[in-house]
Amino acid sequence: MSSSQFDHKLSGPSLAFQPLYQQVAEYIKQLIVERRWQPGEMLPSEFKLADEFNVSQGTVRKALTLLTDTKIVTRRQGVGTFVSEHTAQDALFRFFPLQADGKGADLPKAELISKELVEPNETVQHALALAVKDKTVKLKRRRILENEFCMLETIFLPSKMFSDIEKREDIPHTLYHFYQTDYNQTVFKTRDSIKAVLASKSDAKSLGIEKGTPLLLVTRVTESIEGKLIEYRESKCRTDHYHYQVELD
Amino acid sequence: MSSSQFDHKLSGPSLAFQPLYQQVAEYIKQLIVERRWQPGEMLPSEFKLADEFNVSQGTVRKALTLLTDTKIVTRRQGVGTFVSEHTAQDALFRFFPLQADGKGADLPKAELISKELVEPNETVQHALALAVKDKTVKLKRRRILENEFCMLETIFLPSKMFSDIEKREDIPHTLYHFYQTDYNQTVFKTRDSIKAVLASKSDAKSLGIEKGTPLLLVTRVTESIEGKLIEYRESKCRTDHYHYQVELD
Image (tube, rainbow over the protein chains, first blue to last red):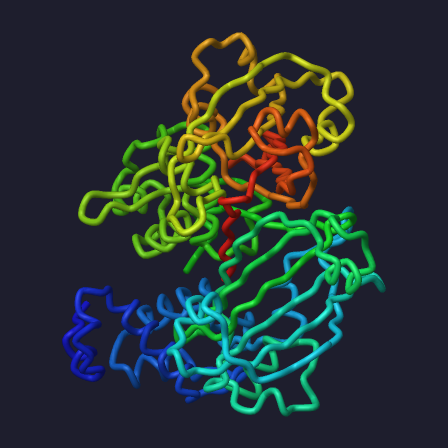
């Protein structure tokens, strides 16, 4: 396996000492980030990619397997390899961990309560690694499962990445999909910190529960496919007949 | 790629219609389950495995990559491929999600409070898919982070898989490692359901906190590498200066 030709083609010094297929995967990912292919679009065949990158087809195949494992591309048997798309439904199931007790994953609805441009507080600044002058857009939502309010969300987006989003009248329920289609920000990873808290008077009113009810407070930082921090979110979740579901392996 | 010879060798009808490398991975996993190689032991070389299974070395390599991704084996660069071992530390970091705020993962300690053979209640029976007559061993523990009680655990183990474990005087802190070394049960997957609850009088006493403090209630079902349900666990976690950490991607 000779990596010199490929290194030359990429001329990226940081790519040294990686197996060739990892370098190819990294390069394909970069092309996806740069929108050479759109979400949902089919990639060229392994044969064509191998030819273009001047590597073997086996190497391209390994690279695509790696990108499939990290969900950057999706393979459809007998058809080809596609740039993964956050369809509304996919993203919801993948990143929405609250479930009604005794039931499988269900599609939550959302009600947008408010949207405004704000100066972020220190917590938000720190979580999103913002500069002092950076503004954020703050969205407040209620989530609905089985016709009941199950969750209150406060969402902060860096306004430099989501320019004028607070002026949009057409913000849909399915935010992650919207980030991808309208702002070219693809959610790649979320990190949740979970605590138990007591419902405040205002939480209680919004969720239709008693003040002092125990709630989950889920603090989420979301990273894009490019490794940027694109969203900070605090969710207060009822668990009287819902639970937060996690699988580890 | 001809799979007929290999199918013949395995003579398993359920293996049809899988790519060859997946079949090889499945077969190697089966051999690991059957203890042909012990945890921590090195597998034969790719060349030898390819020869034994009558497949190409590339196929063996792909199979080992799959087994590496699912953490069944571990590769050490320039040395070889090893059957993954739950070293005490690995398993703790991988499956213990509670962290002190503002700090990284830390090794929790444990204090065993009680151990007894019991008839499981319906919840436990259902969670572990037990028959009516099956008994369970119940362990109660307190977990300690930074010299403070952070968690109360109630653990149920099917006594048919963990014979006489309640009589052992040498149960260590690192249970998952102990399950593997002493009972040949390798933890492969955990499924946590998280709710917020209020500390009862007895929780409060055990954890040294006020009654009514909000706690996380984490209900965990654990599956072995063989796909058996080997443990049911209820953990009550303080979050006044700890949080439960989850990454999704």
